[in-house]
Length: 298
Ligand SMILES: [Zn+2]
Image 1 (cartoon, rainbow, N blue to C red):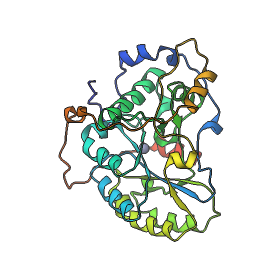
Image 2: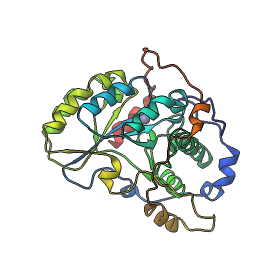
Image 3: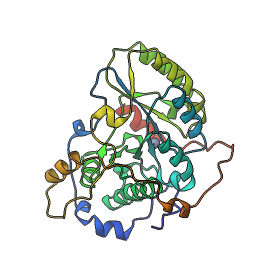
């Protein structure tokens, strides 16, 4: 598959092939209510650390800290970043991390057409599959920006949406809030947690040990998202034909059985490589209206 060069900030061009393949999805106008979106862990003492917006040159620093504690966490990756750093995605997966989809260019999904959403999600799904040989089932919407239509489209494609219930706010503070947030988390009532951080962010990566040490001394047990929700991370199945109702598609997506991760395919060598220099990526630029949405929704 030829992957677009489109980077974060500009929606990926619509793929005519995806639009034809998922014609039934293009007509979706609504979907399940917000309660359908998974926001926390089932187990009260479970804690799923999640990292978004990578892979990036800072990701290995996070992986090294996780390895010290033998923690397995979940990374929601951006397709255009995977195209730049496939070897870092591979490193995370081989270290036992779970991988999910976080779109190709990190747009506000509620601002896109169904065709654009399909291309954002499916390009990312396929490049992950090319690199790792897995069929991701979990999707996280950039900025948590969803509505009934976006949820309906993503569900009809056969994915499960994952949100969070504890935000370190590192995206808003360039990582400066991570320490104070983990201190605050530990003083709150214990409940099943999905926390949000960004491995694109150098400061977040540098502060990873603090959160790790806090968790190690807490009543919480580190979990991946699949352990946290009790549903398989991989094994997405293609949607049924267009005459299948959305509710039937829902059942299909939620009962998909995990397939074993295959060996790393040779296609990784065909993906473009960019040397992992020491220079940190510029953090993704979150538009002001994005901040407003975050403040209203979190
Ligand atoms: Zn993000």
